[in-house]
Length: 214
Image (cartoon, rainbow, N blue to C red):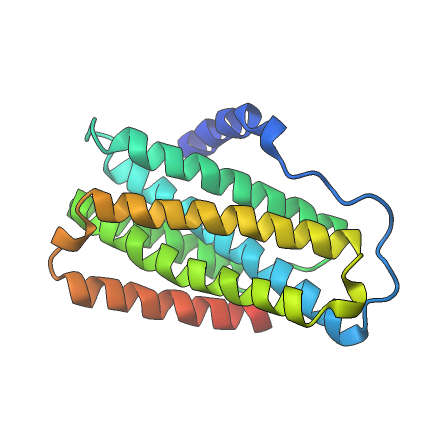
């Protein structure tokens, strides 16, 4: 199962290789304070974990709903964008020598399971899952952008901060597009809608909290 999904991802990553965000030129600037450096590492670690989770949520949904010819291409499009997001943060993680979250195996199993379970329920539940996840991620990215804008005045000219800020803005906008797509495709018709979305939001918020710290 996972080998088939990975082969599809390899094709998709190849198709999107020209879309990768450019790396910042030059070495890390020394003007970043220890606190700023720690926050930079925290951002990359949690975002890499989050995009890995999003990738696998859509992978699970795609597998569960592969029989649905109407919704399959919609999920595939969103999944392709998440693959690119994950690949970008993988590269940033390697470039800055930042360790991944120690709970990565848990994120992999939990995210794929969430995507497959909601997709197995029906396409409305899958879209409700997408709505809940992207609501949390959109707010999370907005919070990071506020900190990177307001708390990095002395590092404002650092290529790495400019690059990270612009990358997050692009990814935030795409995540919010996924949110709109989910609502357009009957997310709110899922039953039980409130229980499903609020439960998934709680899981996502907890995952963000843990991934930032562990």
